[in-house]
Image 1 (tube, rainbow, N blue to C red):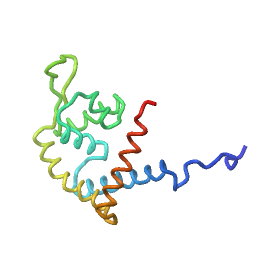
Image 2 (tube, one colour):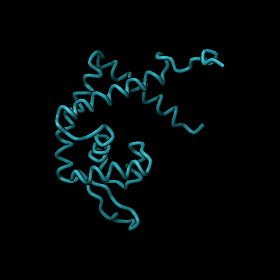
Image 3 (cartoon, rainbow, N blue to C red):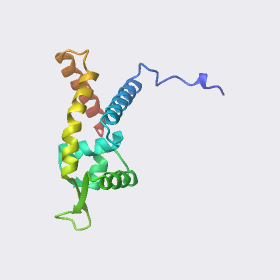
Length: 152
């Protein structure tokens, strides 16, 4: 059976394809900026640092959920970032079975450095939009996300 008999449901103009392409380009731009700044980080590690910097300390499970990684992948990222000196694992205050993940001083300093670059990258992505269009885009994407998260 030829593949031409299957309907093309993920054409470049479909919502899923467009969101996927936008995400890929944002990841590419951020990784390019990370390389230009001489950091030895990939997007996933950047995302882990960003989540810890913006949300504060959390367990590995919470962090994995926040950055959409499975447990094994999260452990590898944490190992690499800990080896680089950007985060630390400490015993959790309320749950002795869990560890709390937090940024080190070096991790905080790195995030402060990377934050401006991240803002500039996202600004470049929206440079052709007016403020009203940016607000509408965020509203639309937020509503799509909420609709997908509904359990009905």
